[in-house]
Length: 432
Image 1 (cartoon, rainbow, N blue to C red):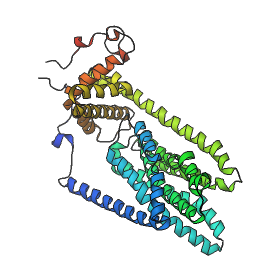
Image 2: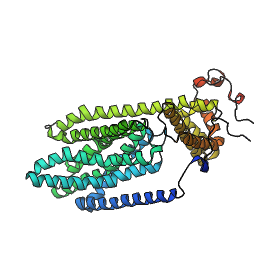
Image 3: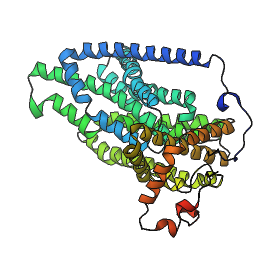
Image 4: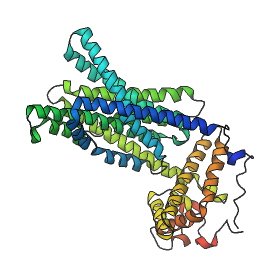
């Protein structure tokens, strides 16, 4: 029977290397319960507020139209997160926070501030303009940033870089935009009911075109700047306290500034909105998208660069860094496991891929002096997770590596990333 390789060595630690308070689970479930109750209460309150402003029929119409961009945005952020997939609970929390808590804070605070400005200045028109261009960006971006901050503080292991910040921020903003779109579209539908407008000339159609067709990415784009700030902070060393504080603040300020510029575009003249959209929003969206995709590719290169150390130590097979550094090969490995062993095996391979990626990122941070004090314990946990799943994951990854090689006979010729140029059966460090 194969045993785990003797390298690296670790000091003994109770509980599989995880040190926990005897009542850790009680505190965790208390936090989960309190947070779930807060989000549920916020959801009920925001539901009542939106329904009161739009009416039941307007609410249903707004809900049906507002949900259309949500699957596409969620799929885009989930695709971006495929290299090192974060837990679903983080995404569910982020979306719920944006749709419920952040939306409730924004509605209450924006309404209060606008009414106060109108009362103080006796000028409702200027109060609305000031509320949209100054108050709303500050309140809304701060409310959405709170979700990113909570994940950054309490789910630190799942928040390791720029992609994590982009995904958490984008999903939070998607939830916020979903609720806001229900309100805007439901209100527009109510206006059309009063005026009798129908079809393409209606307020509902115009609102749908602007918010759902032209700019479904607006809120995610703003908040992603905050997420990038937190992501760069996550890459910083523990001792760089000023950097870890200032970068998220700078990202938040940029998000507020872009949001204010977008909201104020209607005050720039008849074609101000279209000018800002074409000259500013679309290029900004393209730049942020390019940055996110480039960062994703860099993550794959990190996987390929860091895992060979564990191949030499005997923890991984020679083909695995090559396969784990390719999204195509990863997908082929999961398909192979599903075809030969069923869905549970495919899930085990997916878990193996995620743990191996986390291990590569952990080693990369440690090599750059940016790992936390729990580096050794965390590395041991991840290696144990890989070793438990090696039976089903290794053959699938070896098959995927061979199948994704462009030329026949690859394994007998040039080996990827400096591995021994011998056929696979000739090299087996796990044989005893």
